[in-house]
Length: 144
Image (cartoon, rainbow, N blue to C red; front, side):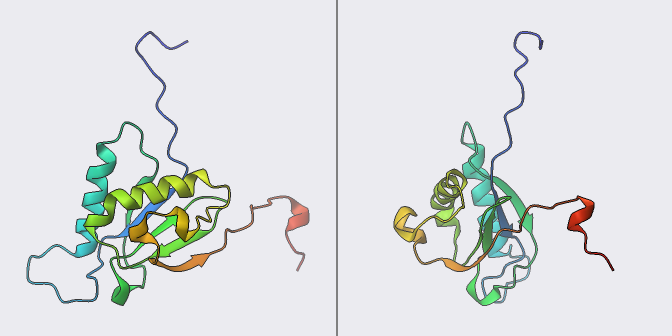
């Protein structure tokens, strides 16, 4: 039994928001200017830090190959469809977190546009099906 006052750490969020921190949103940057993707990531980190319980985990990544449609991010979770999102800005940070919460709560991750914040109804650039669960049994490994 844990001593009084020692609470177990909270479970990690069920989904991850991966943000391209190198995204330049299709434009050249001035010397020393932070990439818009980094600014988006930092805005999301600020919003998540202000919440008692974060509905998503945040992870920086480099290049999601959506350069002309940036800022770009992906919502992903094990066993769910993943969504590539584009045309994002720091002003949408709160809405992205709300979308992430809806995504996390949905069994397959398929959140209809009408169930997303209005600002995010047309940001989906693509969706990727979930990988099937790994089956490590010998029968699952094809013979050569």
